[in-house]
Image (tube, rainbow, N blue to C red; front, side):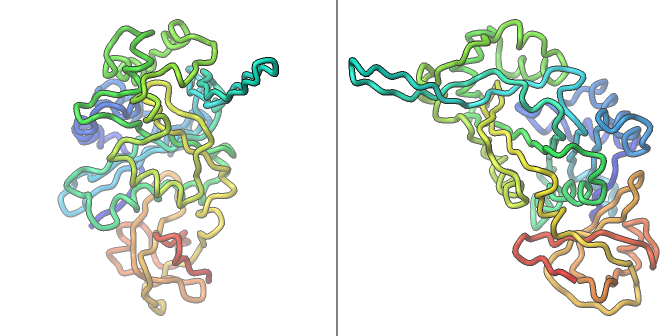
Length: 344
């Protein structure tokens, strides 16, 4: 059986092995022992509430309890850009006009920006290829929203998610080749690795602060601004279904879109409900339902087909065990699929 749970220090080796399969473009999940070791340490401290909320990095793993394997990973950073710069391009518009020549033109531009500093970030979503079936990817991604709904006081009002940008079949980034390489003079993967290790000062040192005219870029670079990597397209649709949207910010290296939302307007905040776990409660099957415990330090989540009835939800002994719950404990529920949420 599968369970999404708070990461522990014992998960580090399996996490490093999984990170080796991610590939380029995801700076928050590189197979570097020190970097991931530091992240896991911070995650454990985050769930234990021993560091300030803005410094926290909540990491979750999907575990296959039948064999102990890690099937996936996802995370929520409490706030970005407070300890190191957080850069994006903001897509803007400049207008040039001349009455004398009767010329009026609008030009798309890219502004180097720190506008999203301080926002809570969804990041590090990756599902092992062996588990890419059924509802696993959807469940892993949406687990973070139920966590936010249970503990909204831990997060800022603005929520963002940087989507992995488009890459060609050979792994190259048309946007980076058309723009970034001219300033950084190094391969995309090298820049990606430096960013992952927190070495970001070179961005401000080498990138121009003036607006960049999009029309000056090669056509293939222009075409991928705001587009996602082919493997990231399903993840984008899931986030948009939960209330996130694109507001014109893109990654400075691969031009992947940055989705945004107000935490108070997320579906999970609006539609999730609390219920009492009860092995003897009446059962009413429905479509898949996300069910989590309400314990921060030992957060755990499963998917079940049971439906709350009169404020109670029937869970099997094995489901209660996966949640580390007992009958009578409070749990939070949210329909997995957007259209089928049931209010009780």
